[in-house]
Amino acid sequence: MKKLIPFITFATMAFTGLSAQAQVVKQKASSGMAKAEGALDKGLASQGLKNQGLYGELGLSLLSYKISNHGISAKPIMLRGIVGYDYHPQLAAEAMLGLGLRGGSATGYFGSAYNVSAGTMIGVYAKPRLQLGDMEVFGRLGLVNTSSSVRGYTGTDGGAGLSYGAGFSYLTDWASFNHRKISINADYMSYYSGSGVKYTGFTLGAGMKF
Image 1: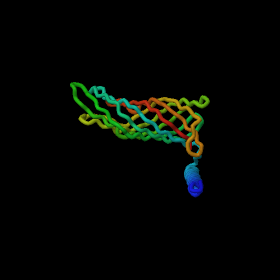
Image 2: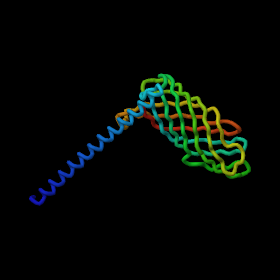
Image 3: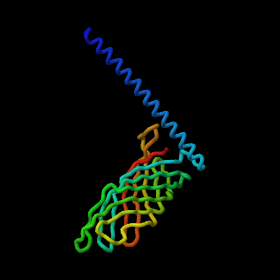
Image 4: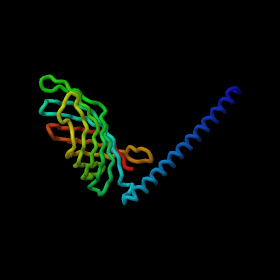
């Protein structure tokens, strides 16, 4: 037992030291978050905006890509990020960035093989919405530029144009850093339609207000 006493004393001191270090790290993280929020508040205030209206979303998009006049059809996957601002309880403005994670192979007319890359999407949207308790039902209408590419195809495979869709969001009891609640969201979008090309997709993701 006497041999164990020094070991127990050392373990207790080590645990106390680690706990103190963890508390210091937590305090520094909170301080850093507070400073970042302060800088964000000042930046938004200079533009006449408020931090409370800012939010972000990140989701995984399962896309459907078709070129009808050549029979090309593929299902690439995209990572989509959105930053939005609540201008009004029933209206928000959003900026969207999509990055292709995985392409898709397709076979066109006469057995021709193609490789479809999701590329990059950049868009801006107006987002009218209706709040129903913890659930929000919304629509989107805006402009998107797609830079998809189809290896082996020489015609038009993307472009810029009108984009629209609809979806819903649900505010959960889950909380992230600084006790901000997390919402889950799902939507179906038509990203681009023109020159025989049709680009649509279903997205499932999560969001948080800043």
